[in-house]
Figure 1: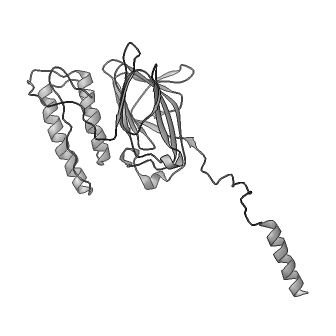
Figure 2 (figure 1 turned 60 degrees about the vertical axis):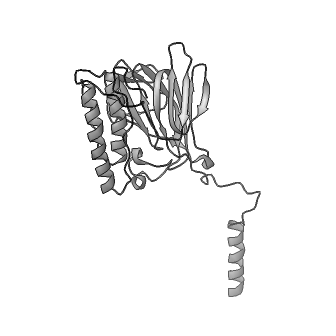
Length: 274
């Protein structure tokens, strides 16, 4: 009788847990479900607004979360730097409009990965669709999990949609003839450095350009961002650039990171070119 009971139990166990076969469909949770990713406003300067699908507008503030469907609108002498939870960054320049069409991401251990801005790669599968409706946006897409289906796409009028990876920039001129460029190299916003006069005042757009670059490298080095001033001379900008990268590289050395070279920038009256 004892032998029969054990044998009967084995039969029941076999019925309740059949051996998987090629025809057995995968479990529902075998592939991580995508949920809305997080986009945070890292730096906001001037008049920047987030407008949702119902045309409801709000003033964008530092550390605000941008939702899918919202359009970021930066006014004159204004701009915002956005950081995505897949490690990508995007800077919305002045007089620009950028809409977040879609940002979905598979769950990952955010506590283990640390700050989004310091991610060296996409921590999980992610899908990003942005639409540049006007103006300019530039940024960097970190190493994507393309094998898992990750992508980062940007569309614009008359240009269609492109997948980007690495450094990117897109400009939609007033004629709506967009200009898109991408590269996997280091960003080099400008040409050769020129001598600037102490009396040469930088425009707000030039100041924002400089602080975007400095604060991006500060964040990657574990340093908090510094707010840009309202006014600054071209000579002060040159001094700030030199001093900032001394501080950045000191922090990187303390964190066991290799040094980074400051970008080559043009502080002449012609302005900064990114």
